[in-house]
Image 1: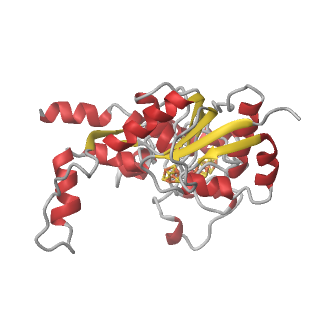
Image 2: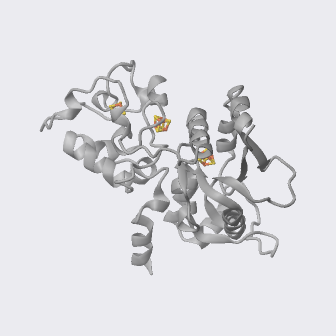
Length: 300
Ligand code: SF4
Ligand code: SF4
Ligand code: SF4
């Protein structure tokens, strides 16, 4: 029997959900373990990281400790793969890039409503927060990407199997609308009329037609600006896409791409965005956007 491919995993700033997604392979995990030898993971008590063929990294780089762990993983791995949207694009943690570091710390330790006599802790034992949250490829060389928040277990499996064959995980290039099977007739027609009378949350509608595009029903769906590959899983559950697979490779400004897509397909587009442009358009990809850097420059 040929030697198994050795794998180590680690996590930086995130929620550990990407590791849970790996375990969500359930019994299929046994197929994967037939060909890989898992040498280290956060839940294993490994004191010294060995050299491995593949390093899987979950989470983004938000503090000094994250950076050190990541660089060590890079040194020890022949191929390094970003696992999940935090590692690929910065993810939800990256929304803090909108604020100055001091304001973030003050909010966390001093001004939260439940805090009494708070202070920002200073200790050599506490990893220092970085000014900006970064995806891992802004710190080290990355060979492959498996996006998603968390990635579909099947995507993780496919990616791992590709790596064991000496290939890299496939990078999807189209947007989610391409794999979404909902009927979309009006949104593809340029029109000067509003397609919907109002912009609604899914819970404001009495009924959502499970076969018709969300945008055509007045519900914001991030499909036009989001990478395909998740099997449109939220849409099967009759919920709109929130963009967790991140931007497509040729349009990293996910929010701007969405505004562009909406304004070119229906005039109601601007309306759909007006409440929370950043939280909707850049929820998962702020650290790969130029936006906070530009706004901070203005403040300096
Ligand atoms: S990508 Fe999502 S699931 Fe994975 S660590 Fe980040 S927040 Fe958690
Ligand atoms: S906008 Fe959403 S619902 Fe409409 S086609 Fe695209 S992914 Fe499907
Ligand atoms: S439909 Fe959108 S939010 Fe849901 S899993 Fe796919 S990319 Fe993520």
